[in-house]
Length: 233
Image (cartoon, rainbow, N blue to C red; front, side, top):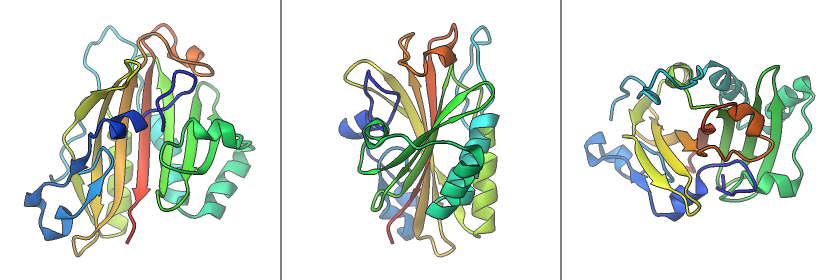
């Protein structure tokens, strides 16, 4: 997702800065060859804390994790399943020009998904960058990503795979947007890298753009984005 002052997105500036993570050699021969845009992939540890100061307005990641699980884990990469899930919600797709604000690596589709108290951006990138992402604007971030970790664990256990975790890192975009990111790599039973899950936390410092401004509330305006990428075989 491109970082632009006219849109809401995180990811492209990190990649452009050359922040490319690689699975550690200690993970074994199957994992060594995995190179992915940040984050990539050590055995899964407890979810790193995203926030700490109790005086700020932190949300649970529960609603975001549920949305991500429904669209990006259970439906994606089956395009018909994604469409069916969106049709139930009566969500209209973004125009191609609008979708470009959220798709830094190639073409794809996007939607704004509304709930009673929040707004989410869902994007699905076309091959070869098969990535599904859901992001949400929050006042000051989330307390942790326990909801995401639980969803990933359930998914990987069902496919009898393995999870590896990348250490958190950070970057700053050209227009001063602060981004923190980390991820979870998924290996098949024979240690072949097959998927990647990413977490991006982006602080807008009180300058969250429309249509996200209302959801920043009185906080700094912190975007939280979860991604799932199907790696090419």
